[in-house]
Image (tube, rainbow, N blue to C red; front, side, top):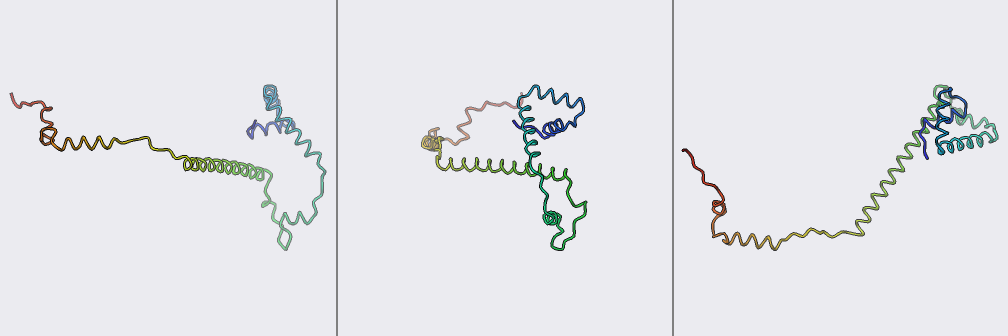
Length: 167
Protein backbone atom coordinates (compact mmCIF):
# COMPACT_ATOMS: atom_id res chain seq x y z
CA UNK A 1 0.00 0.00 0.00
CA UNK A 2 1.21 3.49 -0.76
CA UNK A 3 1.09 6.26 1.81
CA UNK A 4 1.20 10.02 1.28
CA UNK A 5 4.24 12.12 2.15
CA UNK A 6 2.67 13.51 5.33
CA UNK A 7 2.09 10.01 6.73
CA UNK A 8 5.64 8.91 5.88
CA UNK A 9 7.06 12.06 7.47
CA UNK A 10 4.95 11.43 10.58
CA UNK A 11 6.30 7.86 10.78
CA UNK A 12 9.86 9.19 10.51
CA UNK A 13 9.19 11.73 13.25
CA UNK A 14 7.64 8.93 15.35
CA UNK A 15 10.81 6.83 14.98
CA UNK A 16 12.99 9.86 15.79
CA UNK A 17 10.86 10.63 18.87
CA UNK A 18 10.10 14.12 17.53
CA UNK A 19 6.31 14.09 18.08
CA UNK A 20 4.43 15.71 20.93
CA UNK A 21 2.14 13.55 23.08
CA UNK A 22 -1.01 14.20 21.01
CA UNK A 23 0.69 13.44 17.67
CA UNK A 24 2.35 10.34 19.12
CA UNK A 25 -1.04 9.10 20.38
CA UNK A 26 -2.59 9.66 16.92
CA UNK A 27 0.16 7.67 15.19
CA UNK A 28 -0.07 4.86 17.75
CA UNK A 29 -3.84 4.67 17.23
CA UNK A 30 -3.37 4.46 13.46
CA UNK A 31 -0.67 1.82 13.91
CA UNK A 32 -2.98 -0.24 16.10
CA UNK A 33 -5.70 -0.14 13.43
CA UNK A 34 -3.65 -0.70 10.26
CA UNK A 35 -1.52 -3.72 9.41
CA UNK A 36 -0.24 -1.92 6.31
CA UNK A 37 0.93 1.07 8.35
CA UNK A 38 2.71 -1.22 10.82
CA UNK A 39 4.42 -2.97 7.91
CA UNK A 40 5.50 0.40 6.50
CA UNK A 41 6.91 1.41 9.90
CA UNK A 42 8.86 -1.87 10.07
CA UNK A 43 10.20 -1.30 6.55
CA UNK A 44 11.35 2.22 7.44
CA UNK A 45 13.04 0.87 10.58
CA UNK A 46 14.81 -1.83 8.55
CA UNK A 47 16.10 0.71 6.02
CA UNK A 48 17.33 3.01 8.77
CA UNK A 49 19.08 0.13 10.51
CA UNK A 50 20.73 -0.95 7.26
CA UNK A 51 21.89 2.58 6.43
CA UNK A 52 23.24 3.13 9.93
CA UNK A 53 25.15 -0.15 9.69
CA UNK A 54 27.05 1.06 6.61
CA UNK A 55 30.68 1.97 7.25
CA UNK A 56 31.52 5.65 7.38
CA UNK A 57 34.12 6.57 4.80
CA UNK A 58 36.03 9.76 4.33
CA UNK A 59 35.71 11.37 0.92
CA UNK A 60 39.01 12.31 -0.70
CA UNK A 61 39.65 16.04 -0.79
CA UNK A 62 39.69 15.99 -4.59
CA UNK A 63 36.10 14.75 -4.54
CA UNK A 64 34.97 17.61 -2.31
CA UNK A 65 36.80 20.11 -4.52
CA UNK A 66 35.18 18.71 -7.67
CA UNK A 67 31.73 18.81 -6.08
CA UNK A 68 32.15 22.39 -4.93
CA UNK A 69 33.72 23.41 -8.24
CA UNK A 70 37.02 24.51 -6.72
CA UNK A 71 39.04 22.35 -9.08
CA UNK A 72 40.53 23.61 -12.35
CA UNK A 73 40.97 27.19 -11.18
CA UNK A 74 37.30 27.81 -10.33
CA UNK A 75 36.41 29.61 -7.17
CA UNK A 76 34.54 27.81 -4.43
CA UNK A 77 30.90 28.92 -4.54
CA UNK A 78 29.49 30.94 -1.68
CA UNK A 79 27.43 29.15 0.95
CA UNK A 80 24.23 30.70 -0.46
CA UNK A 81 24.69 28.87 -3.77
CA UNK A 82 24.93 25.45 -2.11
CA UNK A 83 21.41 23.97 -1.97
CA UNK A 84 19.90 23.23 1.40
CA UNK A 85 18.60 19.81 2.41
CA UNK A 86 15.02 21.06 1.96
CA UNK A 87 15.79 22.23 -1.60
CA UNK A 88 17.36 18.88 -2.44
CA UNK A 89 14.34 17.04 -1.00
CA UNK A 90 12.01 19.22 -3.07
CA UNK A 91 14.02 18.44 -6.21
CA UNK A 92 13.86 14.74 -5.38
CA UNK A 93 10.06 14.87 -4.96
CA UNK A 94 9.73 16.81 -8.22
CA UNK A 95 11.89 14.21 -9.95
CA UNK A 96 9.68 11.40 -8.65
CA UNK A 97 6.57 13.23 -9.85
CA UNK A 98 8.03 13.82 -13.30
CA UNK A 99 9.02 10.15 -13.50
CA UNK A 100 5.50 9.09 -12.59
CA UNK A 101 4.06 11.47 -15.21
CA UNK A 102 6.46 10.06 -17.79
CA UNK A 103 5.39 6.54 -16.87
CA UNK A 104 1.70 7.45 -17.13
CA UNK A 105 2.31 9.16 -20.49
CA UNK A 106 4.12 6.12 -21.80
CA UNK A 107 1.30 3.87 -20.61
CA UNK A 108 -1.34 6.09 -22.26
CA UNK A 109 0.65 6.16 -25.48
CA UNK A 110 0.98 2.37 -25.48
CA UNK A 111 -2.77 2.01 -24.91
CA UNK A 112 -3.56 4.39 -27.78
CA UNK A 113 -1.13 2.60 -30.09
CA UNK A 114 -2.65 -0.79 -29.26
CA UNK A 115 -6.16 0.53 -30.02
CA UNK A 116 -4.99 1.84 -33.41
CA UNK A 117 -3.27 -1.46 -34.21
CA UNK A 118 -6.35 -3.48 -33.21
CA UNK A 119 -8.58 -1.24 -35.31
CA UNK A 120 -6.27 -1.76 -38.30
CA UNK A 121 -6.07 -5.54 -37.82
CA UNK A 122 -9.78 -6.09 -37.22
CA UNK A 123 -11.75 -3.55 -39.24
CA UNK A 124 -15.48 -3.63 -38.64
CA UNK A 125 -17.92 -3.57 -41.50
CA UNK A 126 -20.59 -0.93 -41.56
CA UNK A 127 -23.95 -2.32 -40.46
CA UNK A 128 -25.89 0.66 -41.78
CA UNK A 129 -27.55 -0.18 -45.10
CA UNK A 130 -29.32 2.58 -46.95
CA UNK A 131 -32.45 1.34 -48.79
CA UNK A 132 -31.36 3.19 -51.89
CA UNK A 133 -33.39 1.14 -54.38
CA UNK A 134 -36.70 1.69 -52.56
CA UNK A 135 -35.96 5.42 -52.24
CA UNK A 136 -35.35 5.67 -55.99
CA UNK A 137 -38.61 3.82 -56.76
CA UNK A 138 -40.61 6.09 -54.42
CA UNK A 139 -39.12 9.18 -55.98
CA UNK A 140 -39.76 7.94 -59.51
CA UNK A 141 -43.38 7.09 -58.66
CA UNK A 142 -44.01 10.55 -57.23
CA UNK A 143 -42.39 12.30 -60.15
CA UNK A 144 -44.12 10.24 -62.85
CA UNK A 145 -47.60 11.40 -61.93
CA UNK A 146 -48.78 8.70 -59.55
CA UNK A 147 -50.37 11.56 -57.65
CA UNK A 148 -52.60 12.41 -60.58
CA UNK A 149 -50.02 14.43 -62.46
CA UNK A 150 -50.56 17.41 -60.21
CA UNK A 151 -47.87 19.67 -58.96
CA UNK A 152 -46.74 19.22 -55.34
CA UNK A 153 -48.76 22.19 -54.06
CA UNK A 154 -51.97 20.80 -55.54
CA UNK A 155 -51.33 17.46 -53.88
CA UNK A 156 -51.24 19.23 -50.52
CA UNK A 157 -54.48 21.20 -51.11
CA UNK A 158 -56.96 18.52 -49.88
CA UNK A 159 -55.14 18.48 -46.57
CA UNK A 160 -55.74 22.19 -45.96
CA UNK A 161 -58.83 23.46 -44.14
CA UNK A 162 -61.00 26.11 -45.76
CA UNK A 163 -60.58 29.46 -44.18
CA UNK A 164 -63.26 32.15 -44.12
CA UNK A 165 -62.42 35.77 -43.77
CA UNK A 166 -64.99 38.10 -42.39
CA UNK A 167 -68.39 37.22 -40.92
